[in-house]
Length: 135
Image (tube, rainbow, N blue to C red; front, side, top):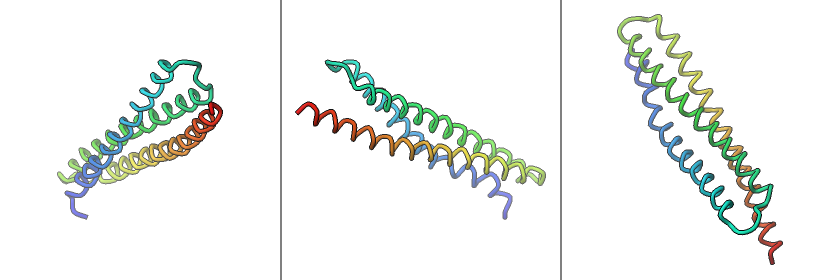
C-alpha cells in the first residue's frame, strides 16, 4: 500500500460520516419538536408516547456522540497516516488501530439508529391506538 493511503483513506470516510451526522441531528431535532408539541397540546399526553420519545432522544444522542468520536478518530488517523507517509513506519500500526476503533464507534452508532427506527414504529403503533380510542 502506498504511503499516501495511510492518511487519505481515513479522511475520505469523514464526508460520509458527516452526512450521517446531518441526518441524525435533524431527526434528533424532530424529537425535540415532538416533545414541545406534546407540551403544547391540550390534554395529557400518553405516558408511553413521552417515554418512547425520551428513549429515542437518548438513542439519537448516543448515535451522535459516537459519530462525533468516529470523525475525531478518523481525523487523528489521517494525521498519524501523514506521519507514516513521512517515513515513520511505526505510525502505520497506530493508523490501523485508530481506524478500527473509529469503525467500532460507527457500528455502535448504526446499531443505535437501527434500534431507534424499530422503536419509532412501536411509537407509531401507539399513536394509532390512541387515535382509534378517540373514535
